[in-house]
Amino acid sequence: MPDPILELDGVGKHFGGVVVLQDVSFHVARGARHALIGPNGAGKTTLFNVISGVFPPDEGTVKLNGRDLAGVPSRRRIAMGMARSFQNIRLMPHLSVVENVMLGQHARQGLLGQLKPVGLLPQARERRAALDLLDAFGLDAYPGQVVANLPYGIRKKIEVVRALMAEPELLLLDEPAAGLNPTETAALRDFLMEVSARGVTLLVVEHDMPFVNSLCEHVTVMNFGRLIYDGTAAGVREDEAVLEAYLGHRRKGATNAA
Amino acid sequence: MSGYLSGVIAILGINVIFAYGIFVTAAAGQLNLGGAGFQAIGAYGAAILSLEFGLGIWAAIAAATVIGGLIGFLIAFPILRTRGVYMVLATFAFAQVVVGIVLNSNYLGGSMGLIMSDYIETGAIIWATLGVILFVFYLMSTPMGLAMRAVHDDEPVADLMGVNNRAVQVAAFALGGAITGLSGALYAYYFGFVEVQYFNALLSIFVLLYVLIGGTQTAWGPLVGAGFFTLIPEALRMGEDWRFLIFGVLIVAMMILRPEGIVTRDAVDRIRARLSPRARDA
Ligand SMILES: Nc1ncnc2c1ncn2[C@@H]1O[C@H](COP(=O)(O)OP(=O)(O)OP(=O)(O)O)[C@@H](O)[C@H]1O
Ligand SMILES: [Mg+2]
Image 1 (cartoon, chains in turn orange, yellow):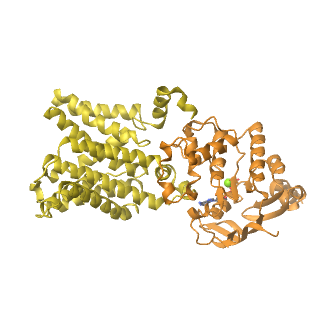
Image 2 (cartoon, rainbow over the protein chains, first blue to last red):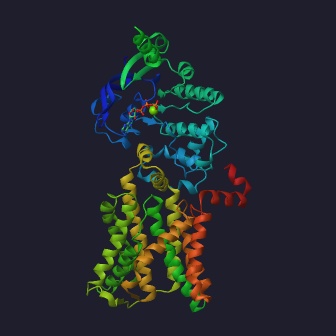
Image 3 (tube, each protein chain N blue to C red):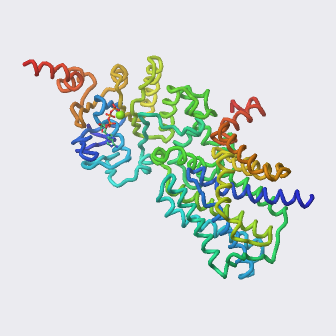
């Protein structure tokens, strides 16, 4: 892989005595649509938290664009080109849709920009940019509404738009399709294809395999905090270790019988 | 303007400014139950600067505002080390310490208070109140105001969005201290004396109630809350015995009927939509 945007090297993390990540190493290629899958509790969300700096790894390094992120505060990482969404929607409940999306611009605004009365200027550039992005993803019906009252699928998408508003090079999405119906899932896939076409690298945690197969060309699989597969999406279906991780109970039954 | 009306308007203005001082920290997610302490700092600051240092009225008021801001800035660091209910207690303790210092200081007049040598009229308070209202509406319309509300709603996510939570919280405390200090300085100059008994725990509780019941989601909240709580007791003055009871019942009713405050985002949106049906599309 000649030009990785994200490099994980020997990442380990434990909470008390529980080892949640162990020696996780893989690269995400610039411009890739890369999936990170694995059974519940495999450590996928924990790995996202390490990458975005919610907590530091106990071992190993995380590099973004070749730069070691050790010691870089979590709030500085969005300005370095990394934005994320959350497994459980984390929009600001008391802010309107457009205000939530405008929050995604925060890291790009200087001190002077922080003091511009955007809310009093209906035509402010900041507001227009947020409205345009909402528009581009078919969410133009809701800008003034308070987020808490909107349907789940809409909020899920708004979270992705908020992350995009930061103009990231790398977008980390934690189960973006969870809780969506098949129509919404298909729409999300098209939406992410479009995001990808804009040059944004995607690292997507997802359980919905048809969704993963139709979106991502590269798949990394984790189980019990370890990496068990890292390769093409086509190869994952034939991989022994992956089959065992997902269908392990059958194997175990067979072993017991033997 | 009758003397009575002019007096009510002056108190209303001082309470509205006071409430905005508490609001700016509450908007960023911190409850300040030490409002009376910050107001006392403004009042005594203005009194001492005027009586001992001979500052003119507006210079003393401006300086007292800055002092309130500086103390808010400094006190933010220890207070922000605490969380939730402990933070509320820490701000409460701060106000008690301020009162204790005044009571035990002859220089500050102890329990006798200080008598001012200059006065301001209601008109000056009206202008100051308008200025503070405009400033807070402006602040809440900026990305900085948006960041404050984001910190209020979800600190970890605000952090990942690039917001410096700590800086926002400290700035909110400093600004709150300054605005509250301003209300104290105006109080001193309007009433012509400062007396520490006025800056008691009940005052801190009342101003926080103005803000919480008015609503912390928009800058309308403190205006409506302080207006409601200043004018209703005046209107109820006829039955002096029943006044506090009716007042208490009103508070409980408000909390049940509008648990997020009188003025919420939804309410403002609805009113706006009714005033101009096409504004929704904007
Ligand atoms: N802060 C924490 N403290 C203690 N244990 C934790 C913490 N965060 C995660 N864990 C544990 O780490 C393991 C991995 O959790 P994680 O959320 O990363 O899994 P996941 O792969 O995202 O699972 P899912 O598919 O269910 O979202 C789980 O056993 C979880 O209980
Ligand atoms: Mg998870």
